[in-house]
Image 1 (cartoon, rainbow, N blue to C red):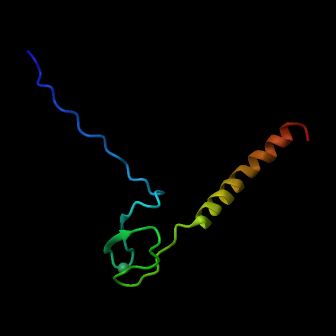
Image 2 (tube, rainbow, N blue to C red):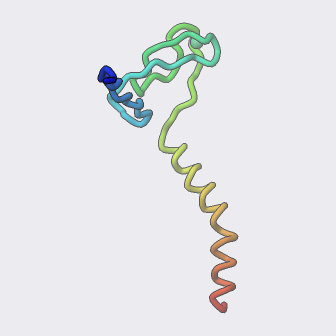
Image 3 (cartoon, rainbow, N blue to C red):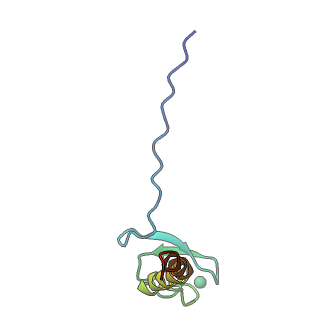
Length: 83
Ligand SMILES: [Zn+2]
């Protein structure tokens, strides 16, 4: 008994949200309409809702949060090292 060889499905390419040149459909949180997000869209083209910017400040906030989380661990490590 031989099984028919099924063709494997094509690999699914996960969309990279950080790709700057790839426009991706984005949904407006105010009017729920989708539009092409080319990376520099500041407001919804339909209702004019100001979109939250995914800028470098987001990265800074992430860094600061990571530092705040790591700070007690670092202090504990210094304490353990015999400070
Ligand atoms: Zn909108």
